Image (cartoon, rainbow, N blue to C red; front, side):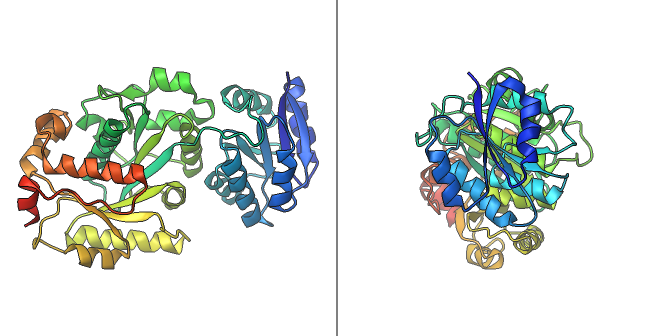
Length: 398
């Protein structure tokens, strides 16, 4: 049986181009790009939707982005692919931010188009999708971001991912570590990687369940980990469009994805993640230096048009009367406080150096108690977390 594809495009050249490349594999149905409601109504009458192609142009770009977002809200398992007449990076990035699985460029992709379509159809879980059916909900993405690269980003994100995995034992959880120092998450978990996050980004078009099960590194807890290679000494190039594509693909295979980032990554990548993440956690502490750097990072993201309405503040290693207080930090960043993390410094360093999670050393460590509370907060979709002020944690809070 032929797969059924829909081409939302003003220019009929795209339908002929795709038909020539796909041969008998696809039955193509053109749809003129009218109002979003009209397009959705047209698709609602179909019994089968395997893939949707959508033309992107500078003219009417905002409306096209909104259309793709609405399509994916109704059919999140159906892959949407952007189409363009030329390799315009702004159009490609807009399509990826909206949720497009891939982007095909007229004439540029002629030689490989048939292969790309074949891969797209093979990895699509939508081959039996029925219009109007309720498909599987895509995975949730949590970004952990700080302006200045330091090991605390990966350490906090690692324990957040472990706490989510503990709270959701029947769900798959992925830690995607893009922050530097390179490979910190894998080192802290004592994992030997043969397949890195850079490999996964390159393989995004062919990423499927088989690749995840055979290549992704897995911790004994069940947590999947993709980190930068630890022997990378300089900042590796990470393409924003390719990373956003990877996250879109992985969102269909993982219930929760925790992504680490620092301010040295490309601005387009950070802005794309800020828009795409279900929650963005700005990690700071009470020091003047990190606070100022984080303030400048947020300023740049806001200038890029990021609303940061899903962003919140996580204060690491909090000590009362030892630096900037919580109300000073929330005012400085203009972000709500999600949680203040307390740590026993000796236990924390011991965990880092031993390659064991902090709960392996002490189940009652205040840092681990906070991380479990933060995980529950994110899973429940709540705005703030209130860690229990008992025992050592109460003494640390003063």
